[in-house]
Structure formats: C-alpha cells, structure tokens
Amino acid sequence: MIEEDHPRLSVRRQCDLLSLSRSAYYYDPMGESPENLRLMRWLDGEYTKRPYYGVARMTERLRRKGEAINPKRVRRLMRVMGLEAIYPKKRLSVPGEGHKRYPYLLRGLLVERPDQVWCADITYIRLRRGFVYLVAVLDWHSRYVLSWALSQSLETDFCLEALEDALLDTRPEIFNTDQGAQFTSERFTGRLEREQVRISMDGRGRVFDNIFVERFWRSVKYEEVYLKEYGDPGEARDGLREYIRFYNRERPHQALEYRTPAEVYFAGGSGRREGRAAREAAGTPVALRAPCVPAASWQGSETILSNDFLGLDIGE
Image (tube, rainbow, N blue to C red):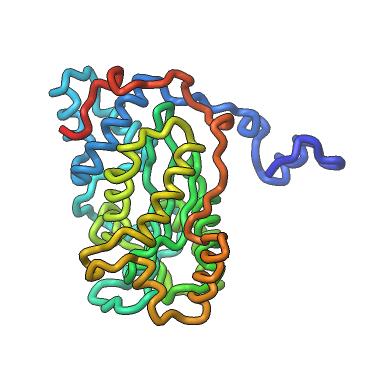
C-alpha cells in the first residue's frame, strides 16, 4: 500500500494520509519460537479432533503430556491461531465495536439449490517452519469451494480477495459467516450489500451454524495438510490448489448421493454458473486461485522442525 519510491509522496506523508504511524510501518514482527510452533502444531491437531476444548482443557492435556505450560500461554497461542472452543456462550449476538449487527438467517431455512446460500470461514494451516491462514467461500447446497486465499496474517484483505473471486460470475441470495472481525468489517459487509446479498451471521463459537465449512476444514487437514507437512507457504499454496480441485471435481460425498460438489453445483446451472464452468475448462479455475505467498516473505523461525523433534502425536 505504501510505495517507498513514490515520485511525489514521502513515506512520512503516505503514513499520515493512511493514519499510520511510521513506527508501525517499519515494524518487523518476529516469528514464533520453535517451541511455540511445536505447541501450535499440537493444538491444531487437537482442536481439529476436539473443537469443544477450550484453554483449560488444552492446558491440562498438555500438562499430562509432560509440558510445563500455563493457561496464559495456551490462550495466546490459540488466539494467534484463531481457535475458539465451541460451546454456548452468553450474549452471542453482540457484534464487534462499531460493527452493524446482522441476524442468523438460516435457522429453519430449506437450502435446496446452488447459490441460495454461501458461507465462509478462516482456518489455521500449519507449516514445518511456521503457519498461514486459509479462507474459503463455499456454496452451502453443493459444498462446492467457490474461492479461497492464503495469508500470513488475519487482515481483512485476503478475505476480500476470496469474496471478489467468488463474485466474478454469480452471487448468492444469502452469505453466512461467523462474527470474526474480518467478516464484520465495513469493507466486507459493504461489498455484499452492494451486490444486494442478504448477510447472515451465526453466534460466536456456534460451529453447527456453519457446519459445512467446518466439515471442509476437517477434510482438508486430515486428507491433505497433515499428510503433506508443507515446508513453506509456496508448498501450501500448491498443495491446497491441487486438493481443492480434487475435492470439487473428484471426491464423492455421501450426503450428495456420492456425487461431487461440482456435479451438484453445475447441474442445471444458470448462465452465470455456466460462465464459471467455461472459464475453469479454459484453464482459469476460479475456485483454485490463491495469491502467491513466497517463502522468502515468511517472517518465522528458520529452524526446520522434524517430526521427531515435535514429539507430540496429533493422532493420539
């Protein structure tokens, strides 16, 4: 966003225009230590198996494995990873500060056709030397992955990239997300409102309100991420691109009567969905694009963590 070699505006002036301090612009964040990365890998696997485990249970599980760790550290790592235990909470409908409140529109709704409801969510993808975040936009009826993007931070930009990608050919009647700051931001909700899409938001920690994305995350991790052990963001991008192509076009789903998401999504599709299919056939698959995240830009530890060093079995 800031151009250091801008012909007319200095870095200082650009920071002033963006209401950004120069110290924040020049700040170079430190990556997590190898020890924290080891713990985060274990937390990721444990959360995928038991998403109802909160800080207290995670801390106790780690202590029983011989880890000297306190709840404060576990809480911080879970926040970095974007993990939150799934259980009923009080005041679920309270939006973020300054954000408009949107109701949950899917309760009792019969979802019976493609592009009736889309949903989106973010998950943590572990690497051997760090981590990235993955956002995906899915069609609720068909489970078809419409778009996805990777990022090294939880900024709104990569969620907007995935949304813009999904909206290239068609739009849903309803778009459902959780109440994360990325999805409640004015930039994200404003983009949907300009398309006259009804916005639905579920309660914080209510996994069953967005169940199909959660099932997709489980498939991605057990069928791809945990088997491949990506070395860097570039490997993650390439591996996820191939897996999502397989998920959309080759992997049959029992709930879809053993059809693939693509077969259901494109069956009797509108002209706009046919446009998406034509572009995919031409070699520009909408659902399989993600911004390049080169390994050289990664700000983590350079220590490669082997499985032996990790010492924590996610399959336990």
